[in-house]
Structures are given as C-alpha cells and as structure tokens.
Image 1: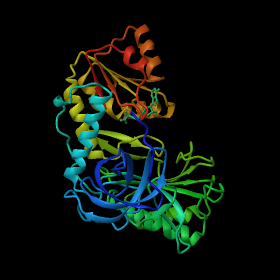
Image 2: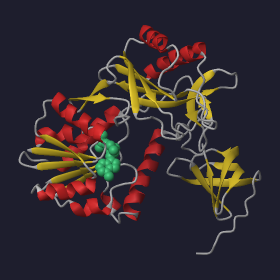
Image 3: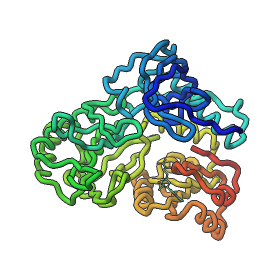
Image 4: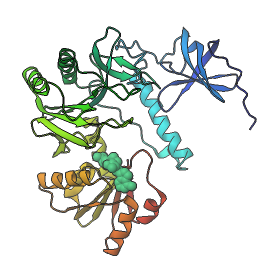
Length: 410
Ligand code: SAH
C-alpha cells in the first residue's frame, strides 16, 4: 500500500461527505485519501469541514457548514450535546444508531474472529432510550462565571462542559447535582486542578438503584475530610427522599483514574442495594455494576437461554466481579464457580451469594488463566464458561485453559 502524504492544512476548509463512524461515534470523511474525524456529524451529511489538527495520515475537523443533512439526523433535545463528550449520537435517530452498533460488532467478529456474521441475530435496543444510566462520574470545575460546576469533558479533552442535567441519566441525579453545587458554592471548597495537583473536589459520583429507589452520593476528593461535610449530608437528606448513603472517596494521586481505594461513609451504610434477575445486589462505590439495569437483565436472560444449563452441570463465571452474571444463573446448575482478580469484588460476590440464599457458589480470587490450573488439579471440569472480560480481553491461556461444551461471551 502506498503511503498517504497528508496534504490537509490546519484551519483550511474542505467539502466532504461523511461515510462512517469511528468506534467512539465520531463521523469519518475521506479527503484526499486521508481520514478526517468530525464529531457530531452523521453518516450521509454533506459538510464543509474545518481542519483543526493534523496527524501523520489522518486529521480532526469540525463542521463549518452543514450543506446537506443526513436523513438519519434528528434535532438534538440536549442544548450541550454538540460540545459535550458525554454521548455521541444525540443528533441521529436511535434506529440508525443501532444499525451502526450492529455493524461494529459484526465487523469485529468477522474481521478479528473470522466468524460467519450471517448467523448473528438482530441487535436488541434498549428498553428506554433516555434516563437509563444509573451511574455518573462528573468532574468538578469552575465555570466562566467563577462558580463551581460539574459536567463531562469535551471530546478528546479535559475541558469540562458544565451541565445541570443529562437526559441519559436518572432524573434523581439532576436533584443531587443541584444540592451538591449549592453546598460547594456556599462552602467555597476548591475544585481539584489536575494541572497543578491542588484543590479538593475531584468528582461528583452518583449511583442509583432503580428497583429499590436508593441513591448513593459519593464525593471523590483530594483530601481525607471535607469542610462542612455534615452540612452536605443534611442538605442532601433534606432535599432528596431516596438518599440512602453518602460516601467520601479519597484520591490524592496524580492520575486519570477517578476513584481512590479509600472510602469513608458519611451517611447510611456505604452501599445501595439493587435488584437484578430477581436477586439483590449490594453496590458500593468501587464495585462494578452494569449502567443500564433493565438492559443487563435482558442480556443475562438471553445468555442464560443460550447456555441451556442443566441441573447436574458446573458453570464457571470468569472475570465475575461481584458475581452478578453467575449468580443470576446459579439456581439452574449444580455448582457455580466465580473467578475474579480483585479481593474486594470477591468479598462482595460471596456476600451477594449469602444475601440471596445461594449455597452452591464458590468464588476464587485469582487470575483467570491461573484459575484454570487450580480447577484442573481439583478435578473440576466446567460444562459452561461465561466470559465477560475487561476492555483488554481475555488472554490466550484463558481460552486454551478451559475445555467445555460451550462459552458464553459478553
Ligand atoms: N462480569 C462482571 C464484571 C465485569 S468487569 C459483571 O458483569 O458484573 C471485568 C472484571 O474482570 C473486573 O471485575 C476485573 O477486576 C476483572 N479482571 C480483570 N483482569 C482479570 C484477570 N486477569 N483475571 C480475573 N479477573 C480479572
């Protein structure tokens, strides 16, 4: 393949058609053979693009003028969706968004996995298109008027775009944001500044258990205590009926990782409890939980159907986190074994089993591949393995380490 010499120049304007999306949902145009990424554009748009930044063989641009809009476009119902990096598809209809996501999965399976994609069934969209997210981690900043505010980062930046509400998140978060900002502005605590590693308030971290109507407010701070923390608790509990717990998480590191490892409960028990697949799960600030509860339930039920589990079988749930997937299927099998590398998550998984009267589950704190050997020495042969790995995927030792009738992969 010949090398592309990028002829595009910063600040110049070109006419182009948007032909695809990146995995992050930014539109892609081809100009003089080079890919140009244009956020907030839609496949089918005819646009004038202004080049903002050039790299070796690609560039970033922004829409200078929308000449012919894509038929997939809809009017965004969020005032800040153009600037905010929180979501990518507010300006296109949900059907087109689903088609793109289906294509993305199907392309990955055929290209990387060499799988015949004709057999893939149709994508199943979310039950609710709005207000489904049960978790928000909002960086704290000072806005243009000098007030403390929260928001999401603009795409590919650490510039916070302030918000009062987000249509993807639970409505109760709007209230929590309002009360938190009132407290923060009255108290005059400084937001954390990552460039100088000074200031206190890093993130407002919110979680909501929809089925049980319980709210967790967690303040992530570059400190072990906050000025007027009692006042914060009082203001939150006076204004929000479903407030269940308030937690202070301390993160004093120079890092992009949001939470630190130390939590102190300021109010309540330090966790909320949600219901999923008929079971109860404790959710603490550091534990993993699916952000779209209703959709997770549908997903787990489909996986369980595919697994076609039998009462005499052994089910292994690799990368089990707090155990939600395996536990939701435990009653169908003789034995469930969960494997997870983080000790706190394993403790939560054990508690969740007890909490739901599940006594055929065992949780092993180990690396997924080394657990294969441990099970083998104990003579345990899984009938079905569930894998829901983190972003970097599962390593080859994991795939060769377990032989069974089937894998259910998330
Ligand atoms: N399946 C769970 C959690 C998925 S998140 C659920 O749906 O709730 C992925 C999990 O993999 C995390 O909890 C992470 O701690 C764990 N993990 C990461 N690397 C691992 C490894 N090498 N071995 C075992 N678990 C690992």
